Image (cartoon, rainbow, N blue to C red; front, side, top):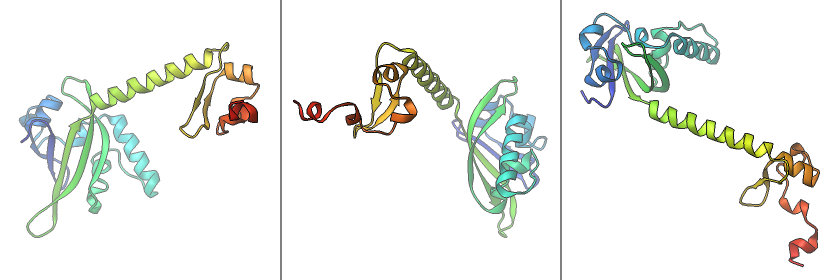
Length: 194
């Protein structure tokens, strides 16, 4: 009943049977609100369910319902599955999760339900979004500089990026130079130190 993890167990049909303190804290529902009443799909962003069902359907060339079936598709086939999922809290806000789903088996070995273990992924997703925005801003800033050549090289000296200023000064378009060694710009005397 660890409050840091979202743990939901369902019966074979997907109806929630266990909703731990972590799920209560993360999603804002009391266990009494959901146990024997809802499926985990009822707590998910409908667009996330559609996207997952569509991706699985394409990967396996079979139609998959955008509901509980999409959440447990791999687990129903004996494969533990982990993926990103967006859920809707009781207050209507969204939370990004990373979930792991596995089948639960009874003493006779038959499947009796599913276990979903989740962890709040919001901080990681926010950090990735911030990094992506920062990288895009930096790329745009570098691209707009036309008076200076800004060139990024890998550790072996091969061109990784090439801005508009480098194109104006050196005369090479980006598609002509990315992947080339920096020595292409200098004569043998310059490279030898002479």
